[in-house]
Image (cartoon, rainbow, N blue to C red; front, side, top):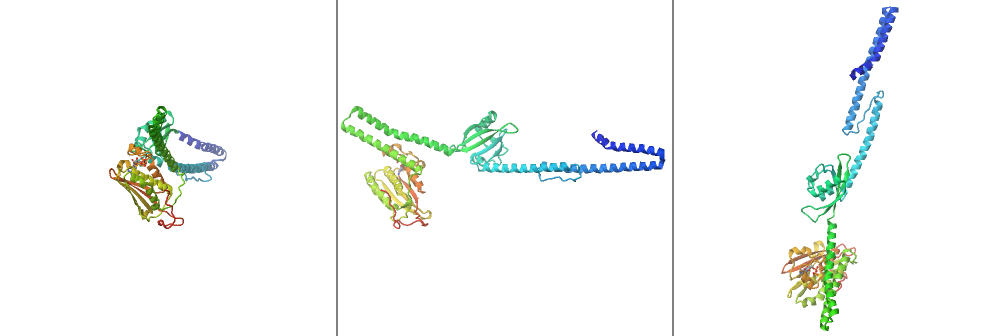
Length: 480
Ligand code: ADP
């Protein structure tokens, strides 16, 4: 129907003109005769023919331009924004083509900006320590960063486009996500992998308003394992300190009250005072150890690293502790070689390490036992090792990793009876770490224990070859 109308609109002026020409011919032929009429008719009809031909050419031209425009739009739609359309200047569609080219130019710039923004966002997301997962409506993952993959231990090679439960099989997270998308409120929960309860990921899930399809959600995961462990340790520590202080305080309080109320005879009173004094000493040792630990932990101890001659330092310590060993019926053997490389360290702190280890050996070795202190050199790693070996009660294998924890004792009653604070080995470990050394323990229950302390050799200023012997510089032997 519309085609017919177009045809009529195009032919209308032509037919009008032909009608007029025919009328003129009729008038002319009535006045001048058939020849003139024939010429006029020929002219009229040839003009009509040329008009029709021009119209046809114009139509063809227009059709080609429209096809060009169409093709260009198709290329843009398929993502090729480089495509442009160029028409003849005479073409009536040329201004439209210019306009379209300008639109394409703007679109290309905007798309590049968007691509840049996306790249920037991806870089930020991938460099973040926190895990980020964006869920579309229906809990389908639409974006995830590497940190989230690592935090949740996701093995799925292509998580994007998958449902949450296909990737993280945890109904608690699913419940939380459903709540967030239903109530549009932020939810926080802790997540731990089934195989490792000590790893804790704190998940904060917030609603995400998506342009289509309803509410989505964004999950931010943060590894809080270390934080939680520190909190737990802090709570345990406070509980332990309170407990450790409470026991001597109860004893002191009890005996003081008895002394005040009963006025016992001088011998009994003296006995009570001795016990009070013992407990006060225990408390004092505990406070001293706690302060030492606290200073070590904050690295605020002025650890003066200097050349330390271990043979001299150990001689002093062993000489001081020998009477105590003898008192308990033990033999203390000094098997430290006279010539050892100097080590780098703070002599006072290093003394504390060896006093602690030898005192422990004395405490935990029954009468008749032997304690041997020896040393060895690890030239490949520029380390000097000191071994404190006893023939004592030993430590069960399962307990060995825990003995460096604060207040950890294998046998609490025995440790208390011998006046131990349970902090000695924690202090030892801290001091050795401060010296960039390490400590090893070998033990067999009922046969004995060996603590092996490795310390780095001393490197003098401008001297890159460690291993100078004790006599070559004037080292300090330590404070004993
Ligand atoms: P304590 O003050 O109780 O000795 P430490 O921190 O020095 O505290 O030691 C922790 C625990 O390690 C001790 O309570 C003891 O059970 C164990 N231990 C340490 N040294 C020895 C050793 N030489 N032989 C056997 N057990 C030991």
